[in-house]
Amino acid sequence: MNQDPERTPVIVGVGQINDRPDDPLKGLDSGGLMVAALKQADEDAGGGWLADADSLAIVSQLSFPHLNPLLESVAQGTGMSPEHAFQTAMPNGDSPILLLNQAANRIGAGEGTICCVVGAEALRTAGALAKAAAAKAGSDKPHNALRDAAHRVKKGYRQTYGLTVPVDVYPLYENAGRASYGQTVSEAQAESGAIWSGFSKVAADNPAAWIHQSRTAEEIVTPDGNNRPIAYPYTKLQVANSSVNQGAGFIVTSLAEARRRGLSDDRIIYVGMGAAAHESDDFLERDTFAASPSMEVSIKRAMKLNNVQTSDLDHVELYSCFPCVPKMARRIIDWPLEKPATVFGGLTFGGGPIGNYMSHAVASMVEKLRATGGQGLLFANGGYATHNHTILVSSDPIEAASFPQDYDFQAEANSARGPVPELDKSYSGPAEIETYTVHYRRDGTPRMGTIVARTPQGKRTLAMVPPDDIKTIAFLTNGEAEPVGTNGSVVMGSDEIAVWERAA
Image (cartoon, rainbow, N blue to C red; front, side, top):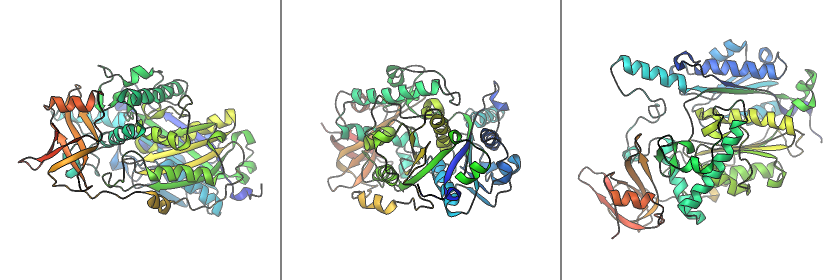
């Protein structure tokens, strides 16, 4: 290997915090969790790193929006005086891997020596505070940090048809993907259950995970009083668990600095090259809901850059906000169903601290590689199946790695993308179901159905299914026939809301 140790990025310290006092009102806020996670990472690296750190990068949080930006308070809380300080604009799920890649670039360019990355969410505490405030005000509708986030409160075309937050949108990929794979509903749910059951087993053995209870595949996909339906076909145990207080961070430095400070080789994890690509921020501007060209480019390009094949990977973390994402990712790399697709535990069982999940994955991957050696692939996804960033880490030097690097492969993803259908917001007439979901109330009854349809002219349009249209709701959810590709009509009501009617 002919790499300059001063320009070779390595991870030397990781920290993870679970904060769950009996009284959620007494929990830490997001900033407090970040400080605690970085102090733990510093201790993990042997101590003395934070005071000398020249870069601090933070994954934005939404639990306590009034605290943003947190750069100054986290720096003060950890005793840092970084020359470079950065906080992401949004809490996107790819952010920790983006920041890891940027830290590696800083080391590789000689622009930094010790780079700290951290993030946290305290939605458990924020939710408790919101409930207490609502009760004091005599309201039964407390502030919801997820649905009430500033970028989601607007009411528009998508929201009218029930598409507001990620849990509303990802089922569109799930149902379209199932049809594309040629699976029945039962087969698709069996795959989801197998992946998620594997996640629960990993989480059960990971002290840093939020839930330490393994679940069977059947338990995960079967709706009942403790596992209510959320958005078809997802149950509560198939979606990200955001009601957590979790923080995680890591320290990236040069191989030379790690050796100067006396770290042994078995504590050092090498950072490989990364690749990022994204879909449109508008989830209705996708060429398909059955796959993601940008996801495929991100994953395949990262593997090619690092000169690895799937058989070379000892561990993977395939982002898992909802089953459709690791399903798409595992098909891209041909990852066996029986092998764990996580080292942390997944966003349901490990915990889903919004944009910072992958910091926990980085930390757990570092710990896993220290224990077992080998190579690990970290694939991150964020937004509405929008943002993708993939990177390799290894217990041994990565021959192909060279920094700084250009990790932006957007042009390649754009060229791989098919034509994006024009959106017709006022369409009435015959159409075909492209994908769909059904949204449920907390009591398990349908709230409404959402149809994404294609017109005979190839345009895309939305329609809703009223909850009292029992026959159509049953057709969409009973698994007896595949709704994707079936015909019907979009009928515009007097309230200018389009309703879906099945073909006779």
